[in-house]
Image 1 (cartoon, rainbow, N blue to C red):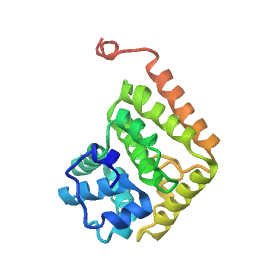
Image 2 (spheres, rainbow, N blue to C red):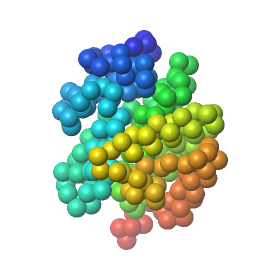
Image 3 (spheres, one colour):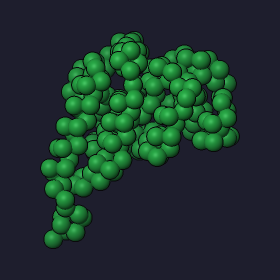
Length: 208
């Protein structure tokens, strides 16, 4: 793994690292190692990691409002990701390729969903960190990269034993758009929505 990524976690190791590195880049190797260490789910072969990662997330996201274990599972996924500030630094790493962005995109979707569900009524992290990061992320992608990332995720969703397509059409759990412009419009709309909901209020406002 390139030295720049070792700064993220120098102790992460993975038996499937080389296969994942060549397919999805360094970030996928770090996630694979962390999931394996925590025994979060059956990761199987490295080649199936994306499908199993997304499937685990969707299954728990669906049940998050009803089961404490599901909330904890999604919370654990979020804990695997770097901070928004570190995300920004990694996005500018010059060796990233198109398919390297797949796990970045999934991580952004998971963080967005998690904080929507857990940060009410202020949504401060969404407004100040997550959505600005998402806007920066999609601005940085070329049309071809967006096409490659969407194609890879749709392939993963279609291969799932229990098809996930009905659960992503409303962009609740995964945001899949056809173009950079559509992604940017989606997140700008989300940002305006949260700004209108909070309207400059702070926690004290809701305690009165």
